[in-house]
Image (cartoon, rainbow, N blue to C red; front, side):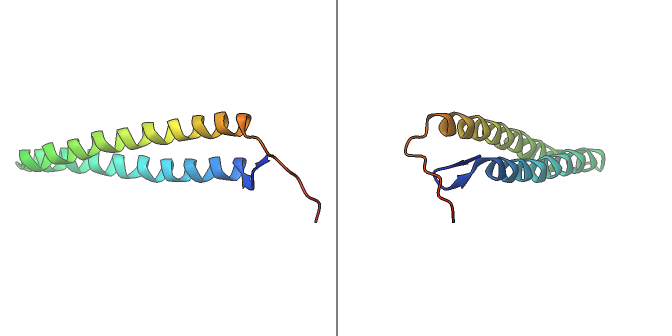
Length: 84
C-alpha cells in the first residue's frame, strides 16, 4: 500500500531488516559477554551484557515504529493516487 508517497509495505520491510541486524548484534554481544566472563574479565562481560540490554531496547523501539507506521497509514489524509 502506498500512503502519501511512502510504500508502507517496503517501509515495514526496511524496519524488519534493521531489526534482523540488531538481533544478530545482540547475539554477538551476548556470546562475547559470556566468553569474557569465562576468561576472567568480569567487567568486560558486564559491559557487554549492558550493551545487550540496550540492543533489546532498540528492538522494542523498532517494534513500536512498525506499529506506529500501521497506525499513521490508517489515519493519513490527503492520499492521492496518480496513473503515470
